[in-house]
Amino acid sequence: MRLLTARVALELLSHEAIVREAYRDVVGVWTWGVGVTEASGHAVCPRYVDRPQTLRWCLEMYLRLLRETYAPAVLACFGDQDLTEHQFGAALSFHYNTGAIATATWVEEWKRGETEAARDSFMNWRKPPQIIPRRERERDLFFDGIWSSDGTVLEFPVEKPSYQVDPTGKKPVDVRMILEDLLA
Image 1 (cartoon, rainbow, N blue to C red):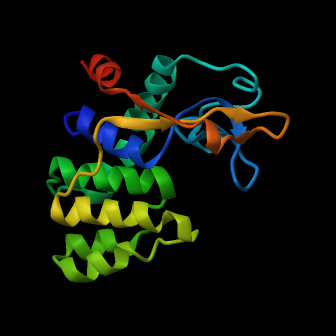
Image 2 (tube, rainbow, N blue to C red; image 1 turned 180 degrees about the vertical axis):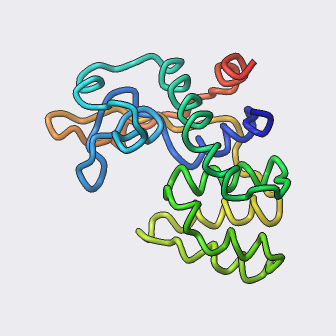
């Protein structure tokens, strides 16, 4: 897939994080790797509960889901519209987070050439409030070509027995070389 570049994968990763073993997200959904849940089609629980995986495996599964599930849906929504790398990256990040590229009004507005309306509608997706900075970065990438990733992503450990992400143990990890290798 021509538009799925290391830069695109890194940008989306910078909005997410990596957790190498299964954890319960803020609403109790079992999640693993780069925000992967059962809804993605990849089995999470019990596969990754108490079973940390390598960084490479987490990224390999992330790229597989981008290629096989999320990117095709984004490209289908934009149809014959040519997307730049930054537009594709922003739309892919939006869809990976919301799963709603097919119902987002900003997509149809942009396709009709209603750029300002689309820019405004992009920000309709702002719940929970903690998502607003991500949505702003995605909007700025799509409409202005402003990239925000520096090649690092935060990795978090899991607290037990709650199986919640431990924010005090976060560490930045440079994943550029692994992603470039996997995309080669």
